[in-house]
Length: 332
Ligand code: AMP
Ligand code: TRP
Image (tube, rainbow, N blue to C red; front, top):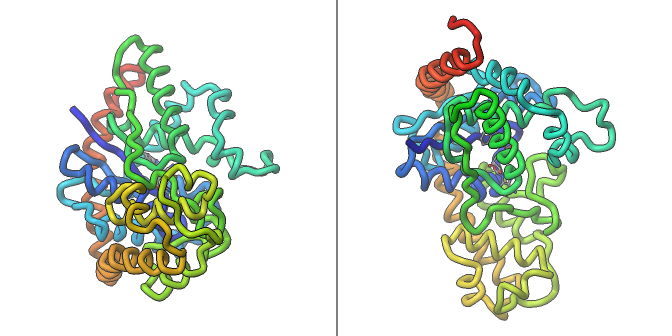
């Protein structure tokens, strides 16, 4: 039995990296797997949130999932905090997770920065909650962008530690699915930095809610180098900004970078950018339009989430009872 679990945090707006690195792959996978797609609102609390903004972002991410093509009837689509079993399993799993494993997490080091003592406990234990998300549904596959690879390895280690402790293969070891041309979309301002919701420059990312003019402006302002586009992928290696734009083009077009270079080798960035703007707008505008339609009826989004949450609860509660039995906790 194969089951997918994946999620995104409702922190600020989703961007092209979220779409190409994750969401678009989910859409393609929903026909082959039983899928559970989650808006991980509890993870969002690891950074400071305005209540009204958070509420809106939860709905916006839900709308983005559906607008991108996730079918909320066929798949389970819900928000994490609706199902208390996530928090409960996170506590249980934290008792099988040595601190040494968490100390290795590079995302914590980046986010906590120099003032580790000021970082909150949730930011530190964030990967344990992520492991609980996945293991609660006994998911076998987890489609994510490349930046989540280390967190997934930890989820596998925790599952293995639990299984070994109780001498049974209860949790499947979840496989990361890092798919497509754009597993790590970079900032439009700096080809060595990941495109991220937390970058202070709006020009570093294309948001899924940007209109055509904004997309055009951001791509036109994107950093490049003075050379025309090369004819081999190897020649992109030393040119991170060029590589990023070619990768974005390839991913949006559903082609390889080789194929893109076959069409654009020798072209100046000004003309390549014009094609990239057209392609980006053609791919993103229908999604943005659908997102806005969905967001016009917040009540309906809330109803969808509640229904998805009830379906998720049924599965989660069944597994949690099994887990409690294994551990020696009494059944509720
Ligand atoms: P987050 O916004 O951190 O909740 O990420 C949601 C999903 O988008 C995860 O699967 C990430 O790996 C993926 N993702 C985030 N940023 C990028 C990026 N710049 N390139 C590719 N995938 C990304
Ligand atoms: N940590 C992930 C991110 O920031 C989001 C996430 C939380 C997740 N729980 C998950 C992704 C479970 C996949 C599976 O991108």
